[in-house]
Image (cartoon, rainbow, N blue to C red; front, side, top):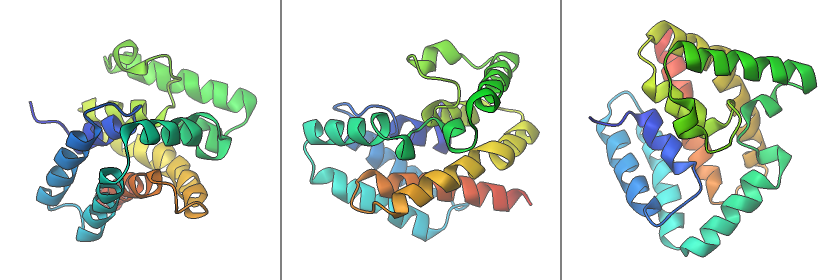
Length: 180
């Protein structure tokens, strides 16, 4: 089965392993072939691909940990960018219920992460067949949280993940605009 763009992007946001460069190459090719996405988006992914080609895996893993696990501004837990305390807890419960209702294998993908973790959200969007729910979820939660994350990366362009986060945002933004 051919992987969705969302699934490919989710894999790029997981802790990087030996196959990260291959996954990026495959994602760039898939985006380039998909006529829904503008050339600028593919160009952004190619910047990530180029930066990645010049960085040893050990360094990339260090940057990943420092960026996404040690800084609240860059956390991949999307609810953090939108809600405090009880409101975030409620949103996590709603997202987890949505995963369960749609048969998404949360435990297979979660690796101990909370339901609002961006790679999980992207895997879910790649899994989801209900186009109306996918549209609503992207518009009401994912794109809004991504805007905050992108703004944080705009202040830190030197980070290799800046290009990837921007590309993911543009994919979601493009899909949201296409639906209107």
